[in-house]
Image 1 (cartoon, rainbow, N blue to C red):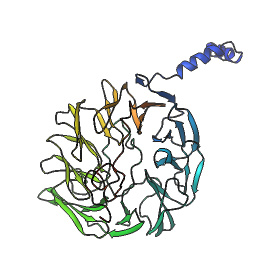
Image 2: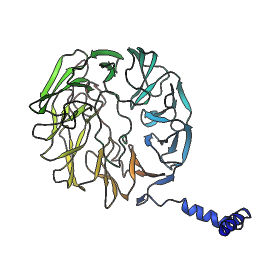
Image 3: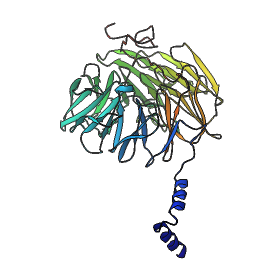
Image 4: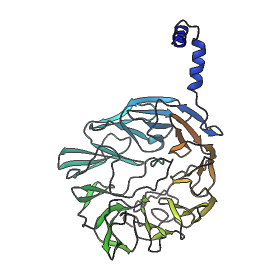
Length: 457
């Protein structure tokens, strides 16, 4: 008690103030998150829930607020009170969408200045993409409107009526019927940021699936799944995945139909899409995959990457290999002995392989393949096409976001930025696939490396 009294008296009289200030500064100073040191490191006011790189800013989502920090220095640019945040658009066209839980409406905010570009008071949920934004508002229990926006637009590109929403639909990016990413420990599930808007969406409403064409804004199909089916919409196709119980086992089959006409495009029997777990045949999960490809398991237990558009097998793993990441461009797998990581371009024009720890965490993002090693702890970023090292540092931090030129890592309240070496991290991805027909891509075939058929072609 005597010591406490002396400390209090000494502080308020100014005798011990310089000493105590130095002690507090030492306690509040963080050691570098990486060796070598990152470009910058900042201590936040709390542990972040997520982060997304938006042009020259990094958008950080906390429990009750959203803040923006400059990508060059980590200095805070602005701070808003909000329960959730998501990024739409990319580069200089990116915007931040913020809102509050269980409260209608959202705000579209400039990531650099924090100024509100557009405000909505009626929407119940928002989906954010690199090339657009969708929201839904309801006028009654069975009367809702789905709207599409340019990220920086002030009026909808299109609207379409849907009969209610039929599922819990609030905040940002609620689940729809598609694929689920392959995830890894210590790497945020959404580290790569927003993806491209799919050509078709599958909305589950009142035990039915409504398929929406996002190019023109039109409900093209209304489907009712059978008892043993799971319906997902991938790559512009409706996949009917059946799991039938017989002879003490599950028998799987997949039938893909054109979303607009309902005509069958391809079918495959015997491929397990991992939509049923725990030995039963009840399908409660969406298949793994990314963009317009899905992951399955063949009868001989080898993993496959299947083009949802035309059913072609784009990748067949070796016996014992395990897929760690996949998108329209690449498949990343760990070899059967666990000692190497390999990446294969789905177009068949290149591949690489490098040693890795058997228990390392690996995730595929558009700019980089992220590898997090343990004992010793390291964070490594590799160019997806060449395997060239973009980042290689000692660190126990987690990877929160990956952008075109670097990555955000975090440990507790400490956040740091690791820029990629050279320009290898900046990639020009193929278009969304399926039937986009983007004439500006580098692939000689229309629509990407898998030779998809374009609209009107």
